[in-house]
Length: 352
Image 1: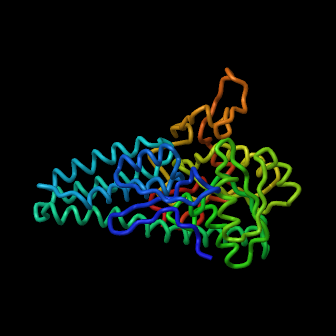
Image 2: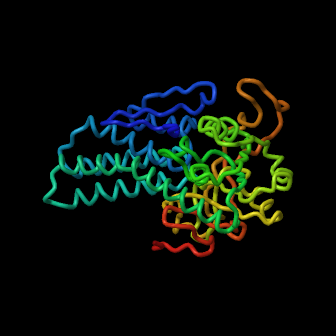
Image 3: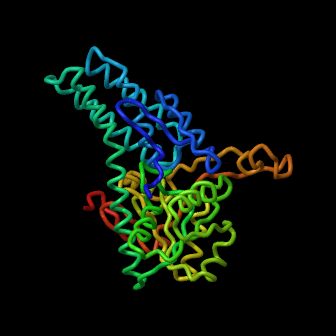
């Protein structure tokens, strides 16, 4: 069975699967411009660091398909303005920032080349933006295979039990996934005995989204509450924990969905390899450590309400960070990228 397609794009037309409606409904909504994309990202109709960057880029491509420019400088100004706006949608994920830098850099190169006219520059920028979709799928497939092979090698087993957190699959990427891509690769080769996914409070990406993908693809899977992780590690004899990342600092510290840090601590106690799976672009070599990673604060209603029903005492104060930082020394399995698996303290800008 084919994986879910969360992003659909063809010749200037973009649709995304509205993840707020899952698992009850698979409904696609049109993204007609950058404003639509910003709102969808902010409201978490689309989420996951790779998917955020892709939808941002493709929303700009949609706009550019309808535009013409008098000069390459005018194009550069337009691209920069739009990307400056898009990066404000969610601050923790580095992917959209890097995508913005790459897009602006290309537009600037076109503007500085006197042999390139506005029409040719526009075509080059659109081609670059549209390539993000296919490139992400290729990267995810490589991440999946690298991670699966490393887990099997380290555990010395033909069949493994995996614990994962949040959603890192087709719904968080262009397709296939990062951490869930590793699990898909294990399943594809018959090496996945079972996968356990956490509910991922308070937004429930695990129970709503990951569980949906696992059921959709008929993987052997069990949903557990976040506070069952330590008991589950011991009860089920978990072989590896694998999660995604929204940003990796130069020293290997990693920001991911809130609850990741405690899983790493528990994995260390139970002597279970802990892996982070992310495209190499998620590594931000300009951030020295996790202390410098901006952490998004989410609305308190995500904690105090289930849907429209209040479940917390009125008047209670809330703390609702969307992410936490896992220290590099707890990432004992390694950081899985499309370029291979790296020890968390062995990241290099020019790794190949």
